[in-house]
Length: 338
Image 1 (cartoon, one colour):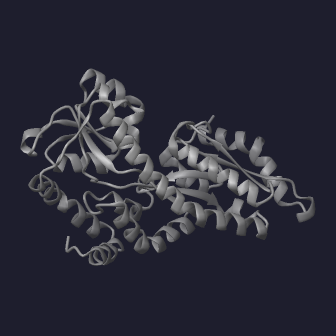
Image 2 (cartoon, one colour; image 1 turned 90 degrees about the vertical axis):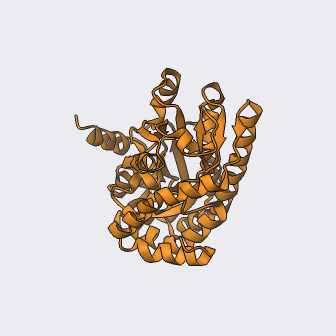
Image 3 (cartoon, one colour; image 1 turned 60 degrees about the horizontal axis):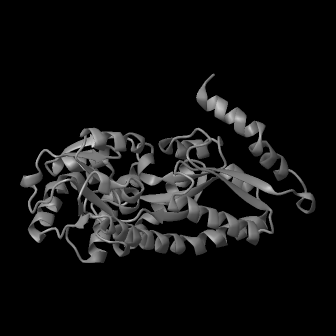
């Protein structure tokens, strides 16, 4: 059986069928609307925990009318890159969507992944102020609404060696989660290797890779101190997750439930951003406590990283015409020319 078709039948045959059935009932007789949410992150991941808090708040605000049921660890069978279309096609009512993973279908979502474009959470907020209309266009195109944004904590490059120049690290095999990351590491003079998270720890143990680009929280999850000794706090990319709801599911909610869900989303978005910063800081402290060293990257080394990867930004702006003005406006807003 086609796996996608099988997932559809399982969902529609169970909880999702109850959801659709409740939409047609008169408001006074309406039972709780169950919205299954696909989540690829594990149950104990900080982002999953934060989303559970959001779901509990939504249930309270709606008096139990809306029940968001989170299926962590990919339990519904969807992979992260499938979430945009899975929600849009009605295969699942909600999902936690990592924007960069959907860039193949919506290239504008790759913009915040451009290397060294954004230097801090504050700059990311500024970029999002220009990107929000584009986010909404993507959601509408794929038959859904993006309710919240949740950035990953700062990204660093974790290495076995300490160095004060890129040349000293030339050829080092560094793991990337996607093609953009691999390309970034290749431009830096490393050897980028694209490896799924599930295969990373064996790759580190066997020497298939010598370094990793990822968030500090993921580094703690992977106990990187068992394999590497140094943290390069590059902030070289940023990534944002969206809580997305399909328009079919959204339109099936009562006006009161829609209003409550929208209000909860507006209030929880800044909480998600605060949690990301706090979790990132705490994770860095944990890494250092376990023996890793936070490298003070020399200014000239960081400047060279930025210079080497500038062609990636120029090429992207050429490929995605709507991105060029956004990049220009963002740079002007943060007081940089490039």
